[in-house]
Amino acid sequence: MSVLVIAEHNNATLNSVTASVVAAAVQLDADIHVLIAGSDCSAAATAAGQYQGVSRVLVADNTAYANQLPEAVAPLVSSIAADYTAILAAAGTTGKNLMPRLAALLDAGQISDIVAIEAQDTFIRPIYAGNALATVKTSDPVKILTVRTSAFEPVGNGNNPDQMALDTVISQNKSQFISENLSTSERPELASASIVVSGGRGLGSAENFQLLERIADKLGAAIGASRAAVDAGFVGNDLQVGQTGKIVAPELYIAVGISGAIQHLAGMKDSKVIVAINSDADAPIFQVADYGLVADLFQVLPELESLL
Amino acid sequence: MKILVPVKRVVDANVKVRVSADKSSIDLSNVKMAMNPFCEIAVEEAVRLKEQGVATEIVAVTVGEEKSQEQLRTAMALGADRSIWVEQTGFVEPLAVAKLLKAVVDRESPDLIILGKQSIDGDNNQVGQMLAALCDMPQGTFAFRLSIENGRALVSREVDGGEQVVSLSLPAVVTTDLRLNEPRYAKLPDIMKAKKKPLDKITPAELGVIVSSSMTTIAVHEPPGRKAGIIVGSTGELVDKLRNEAKVIP
View 1: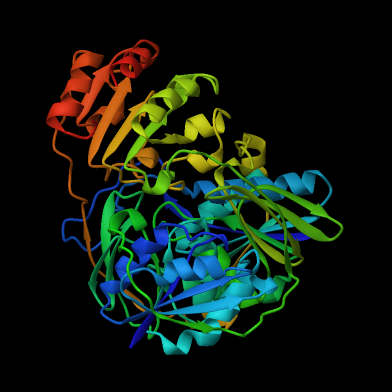
View 2 (view 1 turned 90 degrees about the horizontal axis):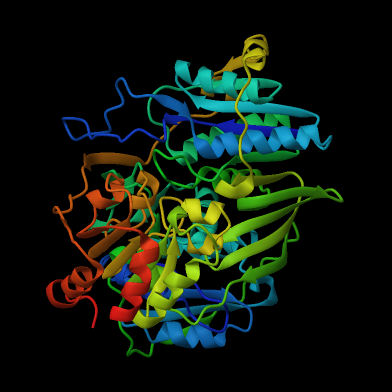
């Protein structure tokens, strides 16, 4: 019995969330294969092979998969799905884009955003913005799963499995990649950072986010934001934490000028330690905070910077 | 160009839901319901395409109980020309919804299908992608910008690392993200006019779809609560607590 993990990568490097998906796969007690579908992706394939618990790396290396468009990758995975009892991917935008398309091709349901595995066919997942946890059992012969990676401790490195080339080429021209604009940052990745400093509407402007950046630099933290801050144009959409943005669970989450709407709390309330800094003592963010400071953030942030 | 907009009736976004006493589901009695926010964005985008002269007809569709007709009326008040109610009570899992919508697509032959990227109840984020697969159409998910150029849909997508642009042949499926547009409110005269717009009822049997289910929800629980925190008096005290009590900073 085998399960398949679809790696998240950009051909050159493997996204570290894949290590958490492998960790979820380990709990399914089966041989673990990892698929790298891309173009000139041998570096990512080598990196995936190092994950503990992986017994085989499948490499579909073809220009047809250069941008990993789901119109090409879903039929590719579908063509080998009969070998597997479960297929897993990270519940990021790549996995969310691909996996339901794959599931429909296989006439299977999908269980999204699993946070725990109860049995081979039974999973726990948040619903209603994390206000409830549903235990869901599936009868599908192949389980299509997306994994909330913040809920699974990543596996370590130290492995050398076989590598197998997958020669199937899916050509399609219904969807064409035009361009991408990815933000580059020296800071740790938001989804896997151990400290996140997040700003909301209270920051007031894009310039004021620099106050947060200086603190993030001192702590080696990632920067996050509420929807309000993204909508106002203070920062890019890739920094949004919440129900429909990124889900984070760092050791320390510092929420600055964030009121704490249900949708934001859904993205960060599993953080180990939560700090809220807000001038409004009634802000709902204080209900989930371990440490609250009711004060003007423009006074607090410089003080914080000098004390760290 | 004809646009199909599937919409869903869900709990209002401002309601904090509770688990039912028997821990089998969410208690939805006497809870305010509304159109899923991402569906409102989908309707708005279709209406804007019609206002620009790109679209000629907007058809709203929903799968749900009798009361879900309210959301179709809302869609028509916002600008949809007519609507289709696929009558189905009880929970319908995403794959079954996609199959029902596929049958509607076969009847209506839309050039573009715009729907929300996820509903805020199940948070599944599946139906659009599944529908695209079943119809063998390309998909532009999590769209924050959409235009029709030279017979193709140009979709700018919100992705984890930033933004991506894809070009899709038509017909295509587009799912909406938060920043695609800001939906308008329905005006009273439009709400009145919507009552006279055509709303056709159809059953899964008439569509030739057997609604099946492979998923069983065994239990629903409240997530573990957080223990009450403390309010500190100063920045200095905060740093001290983080350093010496929580031990999360050096």
